[in-house]
Amino acid sequence: VSRSGTVGNILYVNGTLSNCAISDDAIRIEPKGAHAGYLYAFLSSAYGQPVIAKGIYGATIDHLEPKHLAVIPIPMASEKVQLAVHEKVMRAYSIRDAGNELFRQATAELYGLLKVEKFKDEDVQYLGGGPPRAYSVSSDELGDRLDASHHVPLAPSAVAKLKEGAFPLVQLKDRVDDVHVAPRFARVYVEQDFGTPLLQGSHVLSMRPSDMKYISNRMTVKMGRWIIRKGMVLVTCSGTIGRTAVVSSKQDGWAASQHILRITPKTGVTHPGFLSLFLTTAYGQHQLNSKIYGGVVDELTAEDTEIIWIPDVPFNLQQPIGEKIVRAYEMRDEANCFEDQAIADIEAVVHQRR
Image (tube, rainbow, N blue to C red; front, side, top):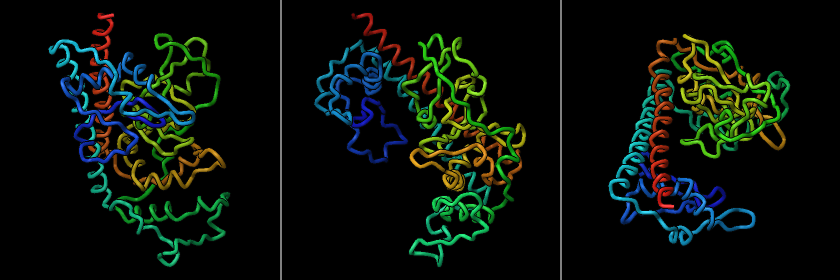
């Protein structure tokens, strides 16, 4: 359970996380006398979250202590109900593990196909090989950017190493139909039943998006450019730059904020899963980050994204890798469906007892 800053996010330690270290900003709960999935579902529910929030303290940064969780009363349903809820949560996390494995397989296949190794610190072409980490830039290469961070040799070194791979490079704009950022306009928020879900930058990499907002279908105008469609590639372009995802079937028709850039791949030319995976590698991330501008909040434009260099891989070779990534995103939604059912079940139990 997250306990500092953002408080009350619940996570079950599955196969993916079982070998990871977690900071002291997370409270660990070891179940006793109740199934782990059942406890997880209750703490995630509309009844569990307010009880967790009751223990929050702190003037500037929210905090929570283990003693605040220890005294939370847990409604104990019958063993049959507990087990049913538990199994749905376990099923959700099993699907997530399988989706994570697809990502690992696809990543290994991507590097194998491109015939390049993962980009490392020693691949950066500093002046004289470094240290110190010094570099020079010709006046002919400055273009219209005089900020030093734009010319750090991370991106040029990544592109140079990528050129040594199995495929020639081509600019992104030549292999996609569209790259754009939605315009700003006044948002009218409504209840879930009366609006369109709004995907925000923090949701792009979320296993399970939370705190979703909904935009009024009737009162909000100019929604067309805000709507995202299945198969689009999303890239965060304001604040935290470069978070990347593929729009899934469930998200088709949702809205996304102006802080998320949309890329529409050319059908039969660029596979959305393949492109998304490439952009998450150091070869994509260093290029995206080199385009950042802004004095306080980092920003990325559609025009700068269009000139990112990508490997010109034939579609039939992209497809097996890309399909794994698309399937992984679909599995995320499938897992969330099982988890939603588990939470709904326990909320029904609590409601009946009131």
